[in-house]
Length: 587
Image (cartoon, rainbow, N blue to C red; front, side):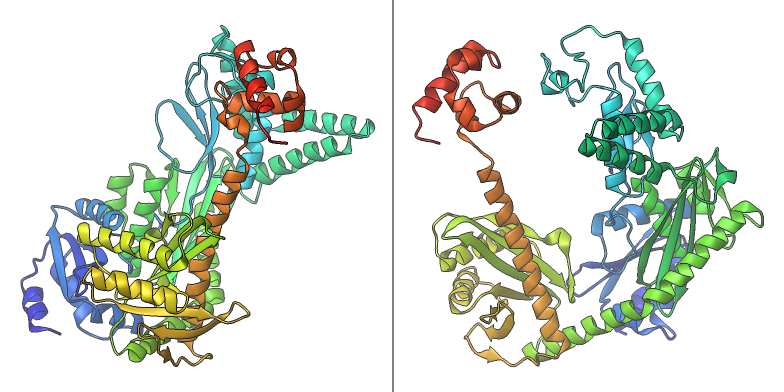
């Protein structure tokens, strides 16, 4: 350990606060909190640790600390620091995909929607969480068909297509009795709280009627709706908790990993999910508390949270402002035991896979450092996608210590008609000129997807900007598989095709290609869905939909007379449509 760190450790105060571990670039590696900063931070640098923690500590070149006046303040500060810096060695829930909820606003003319970003306010009720977004959207679809609430986010001046489809009462243009909306809101609330018998009976009736009338497709839709409702509201082993909304959490740590399990119980419905299985670098209890704190940054707090008895909840009690229970016995203790058992089994099942993945990445990183004779941490990969020069796009993906850093991925629309050489120059110049201008951290290595032209493009731009970055090129064979690695002088670098490094390069190349081609296809699809109708004055999205619904095809619209068009849109718009389409060579 450096003398500098030893001296700094000796001056740490024995007070509560947060500490920030930094690497040689000053980047935050890890954020933690402590009741006693001196004791906690010194623990990292004395005694034996598992391999992963030892690796993390070896990267620490400096640390900062912030003294707080209480453990509560330290916990709040820790949450904010993790959100701000997103350290790679912290357990973070905030990056994870959140559960969907159904939101019912409490306005004069309420709306109903599926949301993930939970921001509770006085004008909204939230129902959920739902097992998956498909179930939530299916439920929303059913409710919208049964109860025609307002569909527009902002009230327009005139009724839109939803009114003509009988999916909205049109409060923007017509005077609707507010009691009608109150009644619909009450029925929706009743439905979403689990009382669905009346609705399901009605759907069964419609399904049988459709079947008797040989309308099998419609009958299947009704049956799918019934299955969706049953899937969401089905009871599971928790009938004793009918009137409770509670969350139950437990964790299990072993061999340097931690598995955190959570159960969400809403009106007797149990949703089960394993939230995290991650490498552990800090104290398990502290990581667990940090996880719970972050979780409720994005989720509605229930009336009760159930946690294991051994956890110190003093700080959580203060910042969560909801009832926290640590049961000794009874039904809640059984839920904790069930949660813990799931965490243990999940860790046992996935430990070998997680360990092998970590070991393979570590070996690949070591092999890369040895190959280039330099410590490589951050790699940025670039790829170009186009069709004969059209819809040219560029993509950049970022890997840090062998793992994808998706929040740093970038997409670029590039100049049309350029060669691959010029397109690669454009994307690289835009990327690194911006990093220079904003004084951002540069990568250790740039990898371009391609051979000589792409490497030469990279050399020209990197050199012109005065940057010292290693440049590599990944080329594919005739079967579109990763084949060779080239340095900036176009020399082939030998990489064993059975090595962890070769498989890492293949994953990187596949990832940047996937990212580029997905964006390329999205732009092509968007362009293909446009028509000449989009260019006509007075024809917007709603009128375009009305025209297509009425005439069934673009050709029928083109062949329609002004009088026929006027039956769907105002006369002046009909004249515009007729003039443009009949002066056009389309169709």
